[in-house]
Length: 64
Image (tube, rainbow, N blue to C red; front, side, top):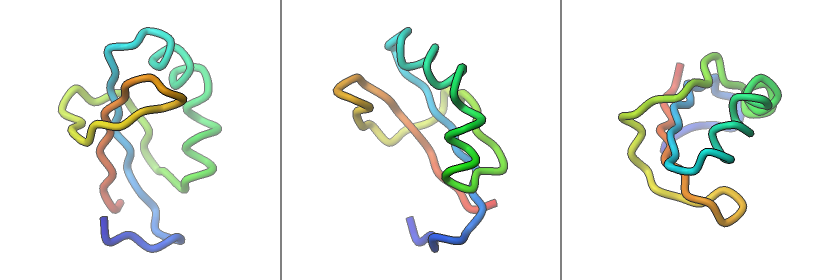
């Protein structure tokens, strides 16, 4: 994505898996701190398909 380790980022995510959404809602603040995110929120337009512990997730990273 052309990002440096020290870059502040915005993270958008979405999933069809209710457990993924519940976990990210509960722990989003901790995840955001770890990845230097100034924004960490559900975003239906997130488009990169991936897996989180074997469960489906879509995400979008942008430099803040």
